Image (cartoon, rainbow, N blue to C red; front, side, top):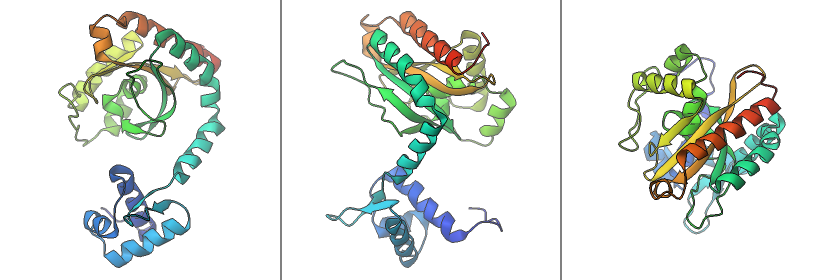
Length: 258
């Protein structure tokens, strides 16, 4: 990791620990030490501080550590401050009622989509993408819907030097391939995640535009692919429902464009 003169090393290390716990779940001191290349005494000191401040918790059974809900609560407060979830709620409820599938609302967080709200499907077999989950932006319908309405040069800069992990055989593999896909999405006004992150899962998404004409968030319907293949759900109908909900929410947020 490149060092910068204006960074606090102990803080960087503490954040590295929290990011590692976010990826891996519960870990012990030795596991954290090995993964980050830090001395055990250093890890113990940092973990103790994070625990004291309430950012990590310790499992009394196996003595391992995991992140607490504190960061989620802080992020929740930011989202509530934006008022986005409150504004989106009636449109999400209408979309969920008409589609009978899981409805998700997410915002862009760097190179990831951050899920800030959801309504579960009433079906027995349903898609579980929990609130607070972060997924790579390039292989989600929500992410591609937002990227499509960003300047292409900004997208290229965001993914400069990025290695596109192939989560499934359908995952986009390069920034060049992504740009082609984003142009198609921009022309259509919606995006589809066709098993690009999770096998058997299809998502239809559309951008939520702000009064500035920028993609502020995205709405999606997530459906098990077998329901489309067996004719239980009509893809064109879902596309229409998602685009309509996103358009109504965009208007609620002051967007006056097409």
